[in-house]
Length: 321
Image 1 (tube, rainbow, N blue to C red):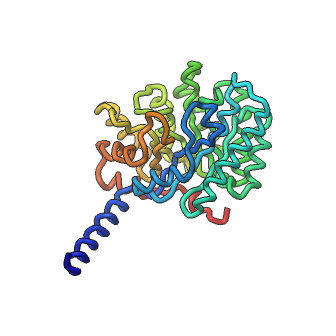
Image 2 (cartoon, rainbow, N blue to C red):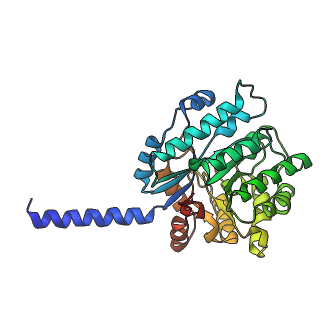
Image 3 (cartoon, rainbow, N blue to C red):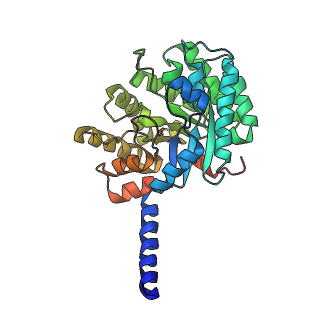
């Protein structure tokens, strides 16, 4: 091959690669890793930072937040020796994984917020450089029921503590499906009235648009999301730092009606508040490249998709933390 032709082909390849990279999200705001110990507990394959980086590279995604799954050790009904030690070990392992790729990955710590050790673990994470950026709460796994006053009061304490330490809060807000806990507008109003005011200074990220994924078929979740979206739309000051991730909502088989409903909610809150996320790369979940391809098939305008792809949560920029 003659050199000029080779250089021309190389230039074309670089330009195409750049275009693909620009089409991809800058950051994946909803990822999980699984240590060998936790993977064995959950009967999934271990997933490390090295594994995830390869998947992100394939998708053209530069950065990701690792939401620790340590909360799963505190799931009600799960009887384990040294529960707190296991929670701490998973949080620390996740932080160590992120530290292998400091320019690309950050970690949030997690715990069951109803446990007696919850506030102590939050304080420990706040003192730990690799876990200071934020916390992940999973209301479903932890069986949080916001309509119970004691649960709402404890969550308010957790939000207050996270805000004091300037730790972002990522929340799987959907109440337990397997236990058939009440969920919908009433719980969303408690979240809006009691929890958000306790964390006015930090990013609060509602995962899965207040649902659980996969897909956007959960009527109760859409009802809850409607309360939050209405508050955003009317300029409620309590929602000033409220954002939403779309992890696992646009699955490969999403129906047209569900896609249209999801797009209406995206537009109601405004694309500036929508964060791209893929969810854990295990089981039947779409991997980042396929998840982004599915999201791009939603009936959004190109400029809307471009804006969402370019959104990066403030917690990524807090390099001093």
